[in-house]
Length: 273
Image (cartoon, rainbow, N blue to C red; front, side, top):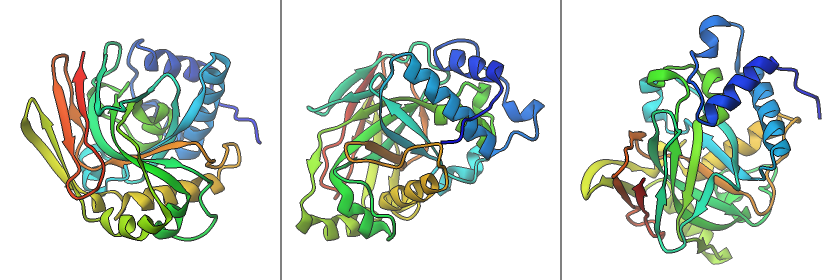
């Protein structure tokens, strides 16, 4: 794989901020030539740093797949980053607690999470990639912005670990071969309801995510095919496909819940410490 050659000082600052250090001004404010390609070079360097620190990648997150929120954040394309053994929490009973201390302006996102039983096929669309999915689950991703006020451009948030903080994965529903057609039909139409302390905060339909969360998996497969410095998707990876609603600020004492309507997954209850 080609070796990335990003600014080591920038890599240091991004890593420190992700670990609770000072926030940064957007990189693109002072370097207008910092584009998405350079952002992924920086991400590759950050990935190598995490590996050297003993972190183990367990999958990927895809961000900004919900086109309804693109104008709000000024980002008009999806992005991706790794998720890690130290950032992913399995909530097998549907309940979890997450400590957001050290995160920058954390927000919560209800998402569809896939578990890969095989690499996705090299071609084909939303239905075909589901043949590689062994299980599906509800997820809460806690994202945070090291750029104050959630003000950034696509290269900034791509380089900043895709804004990833934590991922809580709910009970995993195994998908049989005879269930994938029905799942493909449900993914664009199901409705997520997001609540805090029992009060409805937001709702969204699966089609918000590139017309189906399965299309987010297609998108990631195709992006990775053009990024030889990164490994292709593999069996065993967890892939979270992007928020179905807007991303909402969280605070200590919150108790967030999700309901996935007709999608046959159990929603989550997440307490914020």
